[in-house]
Image (tube, rainbow, N blue to C red; front, side):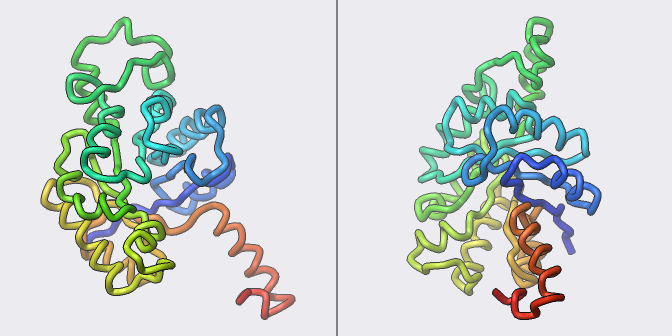
Length: 249
């Protein structure tokens, strides 16, 4: 059975969290600039730190905007994650920002990804290779994106899909995400699109049942926790020794 790589969300610019996760065996760090409190300068440093630790660094940009996508990739992130994509047309426009022409429309910067100005000394093959190595993952978290998940996965500028469960559940009229049978089917629908077009599948796994589904569907990576939830869990576990009821609050 497929064993996906362990991933986690980083919500704050916390180097210790990156180091602890790497020591424990996590392999994918998603730096959250949409819901997290990570400023651009901090993200620049965190990407370098994550990669030095052997982690795959993916930046979830605040919005699927050209400047934000290009900045994240100029930091030399392994990839970007695009939130709140509405449909295939939106996905095509936004994912193009992550790829150099003629495949996409990414601009050339002088940051870490280009060895601080080395673009003057590279040939066209560099851009071809960069397009292959740099990953663009589209979040499926709106009703429109789910409806067109297969077409989104077919885009040459899209390397993978990731399910945003809470927003997708709300968008589908099911309220708070509880990993219901309907949620499972949405996960499988996205997985089928990835298999059909040989794209990377990322899934959140809030419980063992979700992990079993991710393994069965061939997910390449899963998100297991985030730095703030892990911190809360650790505090709660310690407090439970003194107040057993605290762990359940």
